[in-house]
Length: 91
Image (cartoon, rainbow, N blue to C red; front, side, top):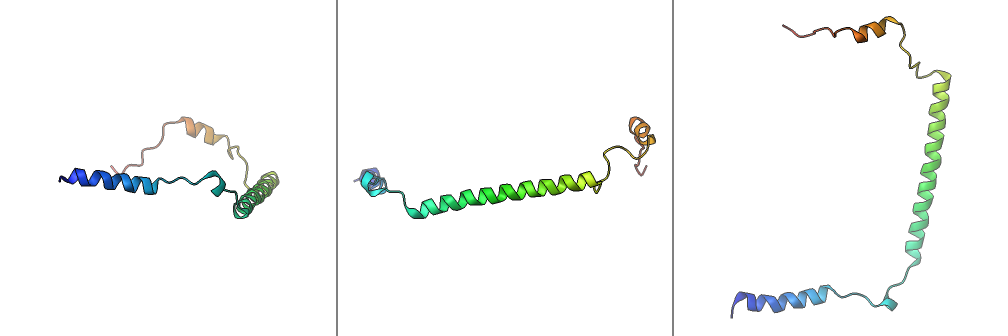
């Protein structure tokens, strides 16, 4: 008897045992999954409110000038940006 002749029927039995699908009447939605689903919805809502609150605080701080301005401090910095960069190498 060869190794393949023994292995093939054993493999078929293992696949049949592992590939059993439940019947339709055995599968039902449970209350635990429903509660988990509701908790996930609540978590998304809480995170959404927190995000809006943080964005409003950041906008209020920007309006108050906490972050500084986006414009350069003096007009000389514009000409420096167009000039050739300095060489800071050690040679």
